[in-house]
Length: 104
Image (cartoon, rainbow, N blue to C red; front, side):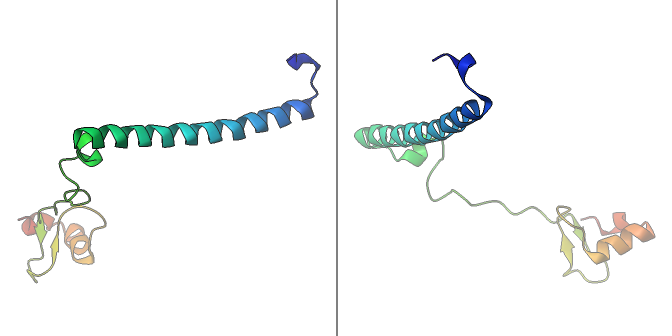
């Protein structure tokens, strides 16, 4: 195909058609790879999750909670791990310059 003879409109249409075709082929390749991997895992009796490096399917999605780093001196039920947005009581201690007194 001689691209030099195509107009800008034709080239744009060709580019769009190529983009669509690439997405279709990539999706097909991914699906084939998944099927092949599942078949290989099944043939040796290994779950796909373990094959992909996950210890077990039960452990996926389980996260350890962060340890408490700060506790409100006036109310020990107020705790903060130091992650995420700081609570109002932490901001008040920071403003007063006494946040170190709340460190666990």
